[in-house]
Image (cartoon, rainbow, N blue to C red; front, top):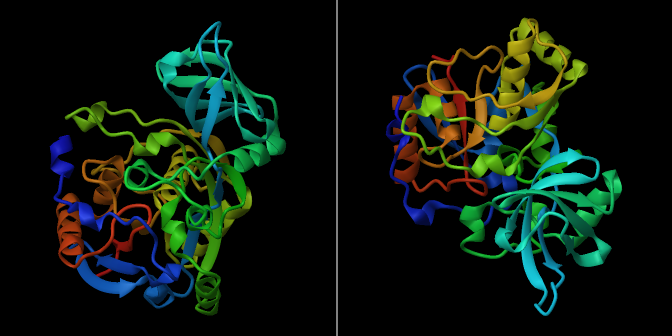
Length: 352
């Protein structure tokens, strides 16, 4: 298929710069069945839209305050240079790959000084991407990054406004447990403690996986032939207990509904390596496009995605490209809010 097949018109004013308050007051477009029947709801309707015995699967990754500003000390008679660093993927307990600007002002061996005594040495460099070795490690490094950095809000928001204190809570899900992401699994941003209580009352089960989201999630597809695109790898983990809960729920007639594309990609990666579903821990670069056969995900709750993006390709794989183009056209017409802080949709391909 061609990249242009996944284009659609999106008015810029529909890109949300702040989330709905409260979180579960966001709108929810339900897309049902092979014909793609459309229903307008709000996220707080979710317990009534699912069935007793269904299982929701969240991504419990926690976002680091991974947008850092430091300084590279002067060389000779020059001046110190301010360096913007956006962490990408953790490589070891004390090292990360990162994007640095201006990258041309850095050399291997340089040290970058950040706030609160956090330092990083440039271990390796390739264009704007660098490998940084820090003077802290593990949980101590995580705490130092959180103290020195800002929330890494997406570029389409950061181009409109600077991150602020509100983003520290807005851009973190209530499922967040395991530190390692530089972007939020944004479908999870819609959940509140009150809604979790109502889901429990409705006998809708929950479990979690971990996928640490890196900056590759925002990289555009550049090849017109989408089969030539290569996804960036991200670390994904599914515990034996979570796999067992999902297998049990589906065997009992329940549906597996991932909360977000990151949870879905973790499950489908695990399902590709073991049948029945079992514990999984590996880097995944799975790329889901129309024609893909889903092994474990029976539906999906997700936000609205960018035109020509791998995520719009994924939802088109689940519901069909024509259905999703019609659903997104409806969302635009009705003024749904798009992207990380926007509204959500619930995809249920197996319903009549």
